[in-house]
Image 1 (cartoon, rainbow, N blue to C red):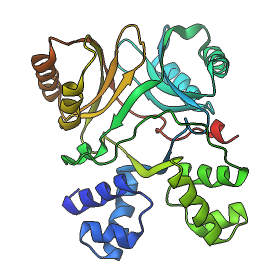
Image 2 (image 1 turned 90 degrees about the horizontal axis):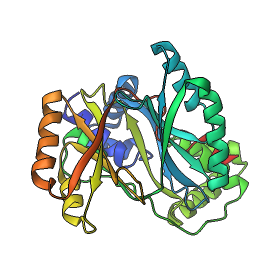
Image 3 (image 1 turned 90 degrees about the vertical axis):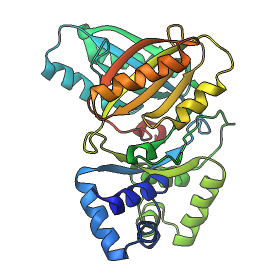
Length: 319
């Protein structure tokens, strides 16, 4: 992958619904060359294209879940994780190496709905479920995907914000569903699904964007194919004002995201760490402890060897 590929990836991370002409201009190539290069990137780098939606505005809250299994073979663990990924309200599923076997997120309307989902997931795991932890909805979540490309620019920052529930109709849901699954869905396809004219579809999408329900369009990339190893660092923070720490995280080249929690008992923040070697991981951790060892402690660290389900809006939200 060369610099022009990196520019195309950066442009798609910023707006995966941009036209091929716009993407070509960003990369400094012709439209035909951009199309050829993106076709190749689709084969081994780009996992998918999707719209990022503010599900708080649609009445859903996001919860993280960590599960530990017992008495499982590699094959059984893989089967259990695949079953979890199929749940209609589960997103972002990945196996872990460490204390936990799998990490995933749940979108639920309220505590009653959450307990119903957990009951179904516990039945899936059966006697193999040893223990699990649910993390409360985060107060702050920022994601810096351009760091995959070694770029200092912050790029897309996805923030979880609590907004007043917004009412949408079934036609809006159809549009959101298709864009969440594939952000580059063309207007001709959307018109077939909705039975509306292209202009009417464009008007609805614009309204969904302006209301904040559609927060942007991006891609999922295969970090392994880019040469990265992915780790999750859980931190316990003992200060109230952590602006200096957040600034450090935002600018650190190896920290892909942070997720700050409300009232989590054992840890207060998750950091997503991307590195190309175990030595680079060691240096990153030492640097964090050197600069902030007086205000934080490391609760746990786990390796995320792969991604089973991308961080896209789950099917259940649209039903």
